[in-house]
Image (cartoon, rainbow, N blue to C red):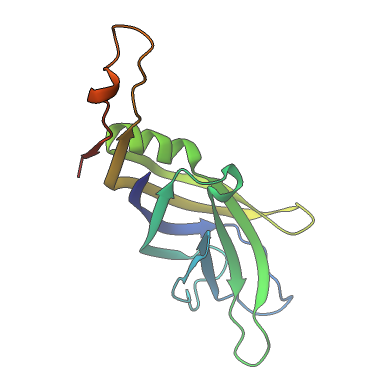
Length: 166
């Protein structure tokens, strides 16, 4: 089992589609990884091409079920007097990044553009995000060797070892 930190750098977005026919949008992002969620600041007055330049940190356990390795970015439009409007979302699957980080100690995905899509999968713009995963703690367990050939330890010598790497 490895435990690490996934740092997400939310850069900005381009070409976001308006939810209202009139006025500018004031976008913000809800970032969710498993049961951890953050909210970016509202990019007030920045319209369809907001810039956030914010960092968010998540605690990551490895391994977990495959479908849990996704970072979901929901883009919302802040409204002063009405409920906020959903503009779209991007999903980033981070399993390979985490696996590489567990193997090497650290892995980085340089800022990349990801498609923002609406619930009916229509294109709604793009969002730029960079991700770094760093292992903080790993425990490796070796099992008990059985007496089946001379290469293994005798029954009296069998042991269970715990090796702490960090």
